[in-house]
Amino acid sequence: MTIFEANISTFLMDFFKTNLKKIKAIKDANDLLEGISGIKSFFKNDKELVELKNKIKEHTSTFEEPNRRAYGDFQTNEDLAANVVEHLFNNGQSPQFVIEPTCGKGRFIHAVLKRFTELEKVVGIEIYYPYVWETKFGILELFLKDKHTCKPEIEIIHEDIFNFDLNSLAKENKHLDTLVIGNPPWVTSSELSTLNSNNLPKKSNFKSHKGIDAITGKGNFDIGEFISIQVLKNFDECKGTFAFLVKNSVVKNILHGQWKTKYKIGNIRKLNIDAKKEFNVSVDACLFLTSFNLSPEFTCRETDFYSHKEITEFGWHKNKFVYSIQGYNKAENLDGKSSFVWRQGMKHDCSKIMELDRCNGHFINGYKEELTPEKNLLYGLLKSSDLKNEVIKSYRKTTIVTQKKIGQDTSYIKREYPKTYHYLNKNRAYFDKRKSSIYRGKPPFSIFGIGDYSFAKYKVAISGMYKRTTFSLVLPENDKPLMLDDTCYFIGFETIKEAKIAQKILNSNIVQSFLKAIIFSDAKRPITKDVLMRIDLKKAYAILDLEAETSELSGWRLFGEKFNKKEENSNQMTLF
Image (cartoon, rainbow, N blue to C red):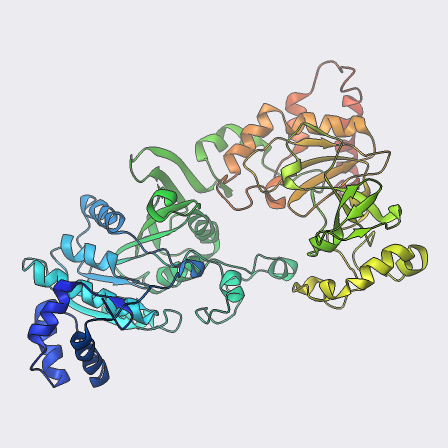
């Protein structure tokens, strides 16, 4: 049975039939239900009361609950909610005031009502109207079945958390021991925009990213992270605890920003959960715990939620952000600034047109269309999934490279490569549909992440998307360099000797140990340019400093001289 599109049990239906039959005034109905459950203003208006009574008479309503998973709506199951609350109880928590900012079906509210006995006030906020009622129904049934359950003042508010005044709520209840608990949406702002959702905060670059970072993706943020930050900012003067189920990346991002924000939080913990088991979703997630109103702390202890096994301690250590403080202490001498500029591969956002498969002397695009463009602008293309071997000299995909540097005029294609131009121009609509502002005002068929460095014959490359930290040597095909897409990072070299030496250093135990100490392998993109630029290759070279050159690594000493030249010129070596 459903009422207000919310599930309601037969037990509760029978209760309403018996107790609301003769009640006509909304005040009388609300007084009755508040006396039983503590919920203030169970019915907000006469219309709600009348509708419920009519539904009871019909008693035939059926409703299929919509799938809200696309909105990051992963409802907490009863067992997990109970286990989280039990963990808090066992660690000495006894809150007087509990708030759940996105309460959903109220599973956490039910759990705290069952476990904590000192509660004075509970507030739940939820934007989805059926869930507001499902939460109310659940609380009412809880108190009807268990007379001994602690009965505080309860408010279940139908409101958008992005418009709700958390600051006033925090100030009003500052004198109470507070628990902010919940499971905010596991979805990013761009994903909600794609779904045309109105449930978004007012657009702003709230992390203050600058220039190209804001344009190319860092401006995108996790909704759970945004809500978490609003709570941390508004409740920092309260005595109490923060307990949210979030993606692992949320904890990492908040702690990374803590160096600047200095939120008054301490005793920061990350308890990893099995999201596949709990929510049937493949994502790395955790229970994020911290305490309010303390001197700002900058490290987090990571453990397993179920076994309580210690995993690592991460965060800010010696003015550096690291995944393993213990591991970093053993490899910190490599943390500096790379002597080489790491580059990201090319970006075009038009894969079905720009990326081609080879087939018997001609090419096929993503729409299964056959074409025979001039080969001068065609280059082999490697993606993250292609960088599995130590040496790469073949490729699956071919790409059209329309420019040699960003912003280059592309009118030459029409003159020099008419077949390619005809193909590109025929599909111009696909290029015009690209949403990223990096292409705005640029020549037709523009690409991004392209420069002299892209045409280096020999590259040492790594995927940004996988946990694997092994570097691959990328060789040209028929003296023509291979390109990499924007999920990869690389440095380019003039000779194969230099490329082999750089690869040897990067794959050495000391560099690999350093990377494992600073990389968050559960991140969506574990390897980034920022990470790679921290590898001080000069120091690694000095530590390895081979006593004798092997035939495979001839040129070792000459390679080392490049570092000295770099110091003399006081410029970073770009090479390509």
